[in-house]
Image (cartoon, rainbow, N blue to C red):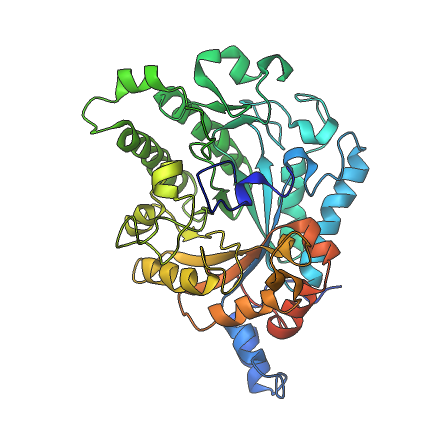
Length: 425
């Protein structure tokens, strides 16, 4: 997905954007270690063990961004590649892997709702000969890692040709559900039957596997494409009565998806958490005094019809992981301005705040000078540590954790992850 389009930032006119951790440390074990002096002489060590702190990495499967390394590998090779990512997480003293299991309205498990994912075999709907999600859950837990299942609710394809989909793909069986936009295909969020279907498809995985969390990214309504309109006029005419405008109706549709999914997860498996990783700017303060001191070209409330702040305040999600993919001092969206803003949003709500970190930018010559410094990411973790509401960090993405182009992840581990930590519960 070319570093995942969802993770790009638009500043102008709106456009397309060896291992220590064998098991999770329990508080009693950490307390005993401190009592016995085992952590003496390690600055911050006791705090790292005693506190709960999410340390995660995303593993993207869409278009084989991270894993599998290419489509069509044998089941044994695919499994080995997945295990390698889990072992890398252990080696980096991480404690959670967020695996993309529903990349494009297809599945990394034998779903009765949707076809097998194309990223596995190269042919959507073809059985890969094993169960990637089931294996990931089992192998992650055996290593003391949490496994968060990452779903994309509405994306159907990164192309606009329905004939390229599996013959039994729901989007082909129900073409009235689909909207082409920006050269891609999306399910229409304004249709109640679509909202029910995508929830059913995702909840199948919750029901069948011992996942620790349901994770959504920031694709609700698609990112705006200049000069194009999302063709949901018929749905708006049918269901939009009582709303002041189409934008309010669209936000209500997204609200319903989030609220309903939250309620259904809790009814099915109360221990499974529900988290969302939105684009890092809800609204600019110039648009709304409640917004952040930013001048972002995309605002989730206005452009993606996603009221991320509202979901937190209403308690519909258990954690939020905003993608704060900008360096400290980046004027349009300063990391140092956004961390405290999100901290204030979650304060007193019971919603955990994790920060999404742009490891993929470190050492990329196309990025600003700050990202050429291996210490930039470590400074992020140190800065966020001053805010009690921040309960951890998640790194995009797995391939960057492994390759660590300029040693930025090495620096984070050396500076901040000297000992193990438990994920927040």
